[in-house]
Amino acid sequence: MLNNAMPSSQLIDKNGFCVWLTGLPSAGKSTIAGVLVQLLNERNRTLTLLDGDVVRTHLSAGLGFSRQDRDTNIARIGFVASEIVRHDGAVICAVVSPYDAARKKVRCMVDRAGGDRGHFILVHVSTPLEICEERDVKGLYAKARSGGLQGMTGVDDPYEPPLQPELTIDATASEVFQIDASGRDAVLCSALEDNLILTTYMDVLANAGVVAPRLHLRLANEIPLGMGCGSSAAALLAGILLANHFGNLNLSSDQILEEACRREGHPDNVAACYLGAMTVSVVTEGRVITATCGQNLNWNLLVVVPFAGLATSKARGLVPMYYSREDAVANIQSTALLVAAFAQGRGDLLRFAMRDRLHQPYRSKVCPLLPLLLPLAETPGVLGVALSGAGPSVLIIAEDAMDRSVDPAIRQSAGDAEIHIIHTRIAGGVDQN
Picture 1 (cartoon, helix red, strand yellow):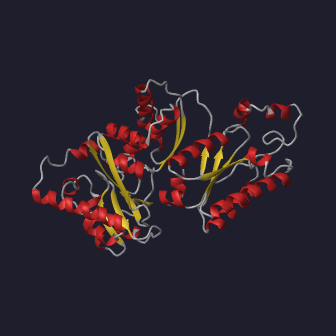
Picture 2: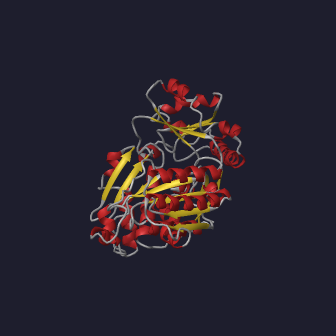
Picture 3: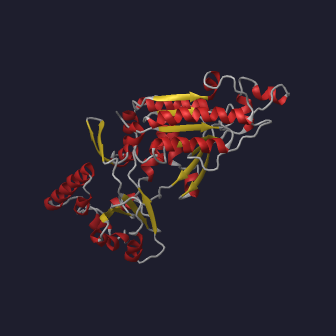
């Protein structure tokens, strides 16, 4: 959640931010806040938790539940949160905060304190009202239904759901396995049969002797499937992380990565997916050893996606069993130069570092975009061009993450005005320290 909302994992670890959890009473805000506190503590990030009930007892003692008093309560919490963010602190607020206008004022307050946008992360815990009433251990809903309590949010006082939260969570139990997918390849992602996320989730729990709780997942996928973009690695990790959470396995980051590596067969994709940025990895003595750099580079990563996919097994069958010493040495040199380029922020090195003699010459015949786009490496603003994974997509790295001026040249070179271009950036991952 935080990695998507903020440019890099270093900002999560060093900059101020506020995660604001809003939802009906008994929606699960405090429970989710507690899990988030634990995860951030594992990253050695000190933070403050402002829980609505606790704040009411101390900071807002004496306030009632009229609209004016509710707005005053939210303004007070927002002010405290903004001061924490101003001094590069992290704060999690778990508050009903039913009114949209009050939440927007807090967002402005926090972002202004942080110096720019992106420091306020709104999370809507969208648990349905009937589930909240079933969970209500305090009996407030029942009391409100019987007329013994006035101004109960969700009963006789409105809750205004946020229209554009950074994240929406439906914290309800599921009776059957179900996936509601949106975005890219939604039909494939929502299929239960042979779904890599679910099969991994159930297999990890079965190996641990744990009965798998049924899940209803809402999946917003932006990774092209079968296009050399690491979709299988992402699915494997998602399944393992779900199993770790819902099965209470308490796997460490190292154990999660090693489990994913064992299932993938190598660490290259899963390590990069888990840790983000430029990640190099090796398996030695049964352990996955990794190193990461380049988290804060503002390069524009463009993935040019063709209409037809390519099975990884077919792509692997195209490369030879043996290479000349000259080709092997050339690729070792390119690899070293590539890591140096990311570590030092040397975009000028990428044009040479992204050259390849081991797999691109053999796969270009089934990846027709590659020979068309490789000459773009000489175009001003383009830093380097290479096949994305085993193909058929092509990765282009450009100078400015906000720049779209390269797109026309890509379409012209590809000979396709409708070719799909994904603009993305270098993302942070999980901190293993």
